Length: 105
Image (cartoon, one colour):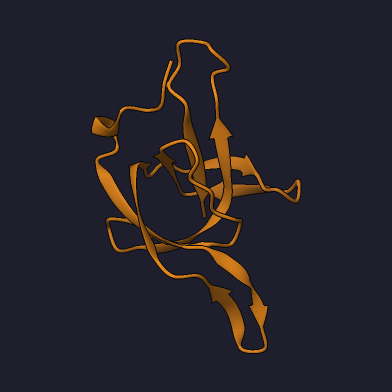
């Protein structure tokens, strides 16, 4: 199947990619608007470091969206959160929609 249909990407999130630490704190790239479907549901996920952490919401975006861990995201509700992981979800030819799953703190 192809990518997640655009008609399902009903929300807009603002993402600022994490670029590293400076002497004054974290540095972020320019904000970008990303079309997504936001599911505000609490669940346990595994971080890139292998720790089990709590995710308070998940955004589903088009394939190819990349956000490094610790990127800053503003949800449609105005809540500001950070990325735990952005994972490509590819059905490998199966009839499932390809997308990017963005796990948020």
